[in-house]
Amino acid sequence: MARILVVDDEIGIRELLSEILYDEGHTVELAENAQQAREARQRTRPDLVLLDIWMPDTDGVSLLKEWASQSLLDMPVIMMSGHATIDTAVEATRIGAIDFLEKPITLQRLLKTVAAGLARVRLPQGTAVAAAPAPAPVAAATAQLTVPHHQQAPAASAAAYSPGLAATPAAAVAPAQADAAEPPAAANQVSGVSLDLPLREARDAFERIYFEYHLGRENHSMTRVSEKTGLERTHLYRKLKQLGIESSRKRSL
Image 1 (cartoon, rainbow, N blue to C red):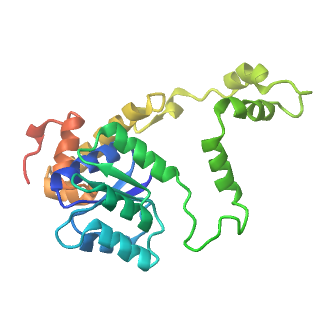
Image 2 (image 1 turned 120 degrees about the horizontal axis):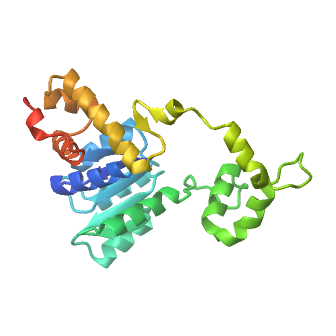
Image 3 (image 1 turned 120 degrees about the vertical axis):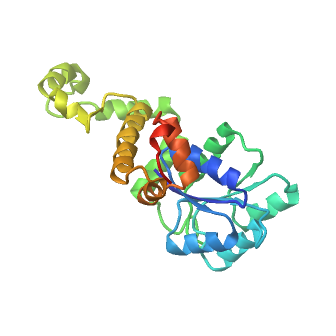
């Protein structure tokens, strides 16, 4: 899960991107202009920023320059625009943006670009690449991204051998271990949600319980539920509809 800041002056774009990224498990913060984006960046460093180029107060490229000049451009920034020229996209990349999304943005392109941005290893400004060896976690992550799976297989296979069994594969004794460690049925559930479900189904089941709880606690006041859950009301309505929570139950605003 990552914290993603979406900066766009169009409410429809903000809500659509927020809904998609939220469904992917990310935490999303929204800003409708450069000033709100500055405030969000000041509160906490996001893991990634989706930044619109054309905005009424300060355009995205100017904001990108501002962050770079203040040494605040230490997170991946992906620019977005439906009217930008090639020169604008090149300039944004030169300043420090890692990619560019042309509107209308397709779902596949959005998710692929965001995933690549989050996987990108960004060094502090002014740091030479060869100044020091990469920390072990970074090196391991980089290897995982760059080494083909068939080349990783020998290492994984070697690690699977149990040291006390004369190089007998651990997989050979897995069935007996699995039987011994089989958890009771109750251990496979959390708040009535089966942990054996696929992730998306388990998350939806939990979210139904979560929102039903807050709706009941706040007497179905959408304003208070919105405040408690941290979702904008439009996003909250969409989420309840997506989860199959009947709109007729939402009695007050």
